[in-house]
Length: 101
Image (cartoon, rainbow, N blue to C red; front, side, top):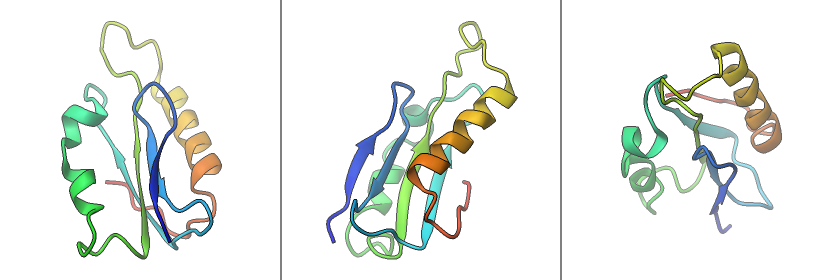
């Protein structure tokens, strides 16, 4: 099994998975309303993806990003939630558990 990071959109969404096999669990990082996926989580998602850290097997890891700059953000929470549901449906629909961090 070889996992790779797949960039999903310009807002910083990505998923780390094996194209041929799905793990039963997904750890999903979602930043706060005025945060940013890279600034909020820094290197933490990369660190848990390291071999022998417990997440290299049994888990897919993803980060969901969205425009969160207060002045530019014209999206409401319902729109962001809809994008999140689309993200999960498209990229993690086979995962059994989706813990949101």
